[in-house]
Image (cartoon, rainbow, N blue to C red; front, side, top):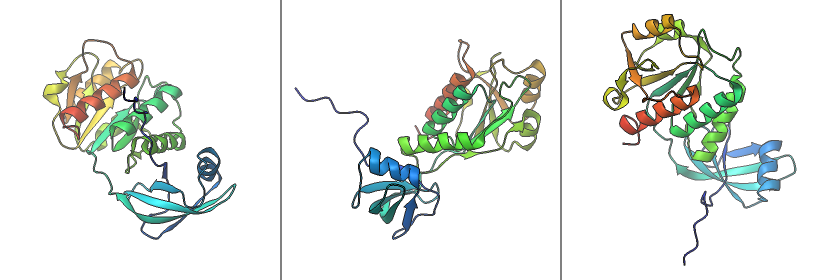
Length: 244
């Protein structure tokens, strides 16, 4: 009887780095990633690592120096070009910290290009720590194989967001809307997900009045805000995105 394959499959470690990458470039890692590679994964000189900078694809690099708090790598060749993802924005009302962290992680894994926190009347979170969310997106991208990081915008009020909206807006309206299978079509788009308590009647009317807004239904059951975000993203990727 054949052995069951391990999951996830064994592969080279992947790290996001901020310096621009290219063939022959030298990359110095600071204490945290150096400790991870050297002490956790037990890699030393000669070990191979995959790097990406969010702008030039993925690169194979080799460790040339390894210390307790520093590691030096040399980029050898490009292993994958920069990915092309649909021009999709997830506009979401921040919820509690753990749920927002999970939402950003899953949105990154699903291939969203832009993340836009939107502040509403019933938004629970008073502050959004963008640096924390960026780190979560980076970790998700490292794990799922993305080479392009999603952009993360400053929080914006709902009315202001609608003023600058430049694309079709799929509005997940808990009061009902068009079936996603009929409403979603390819092209630049945004998905708007409300807060835990839902939009106020005034906010719902404001969104529905926007000429680019399309109210959609996510089914007959009441979904948590973060679940609704993942459901809408999954539907878009399957119907109009890069799952087709």
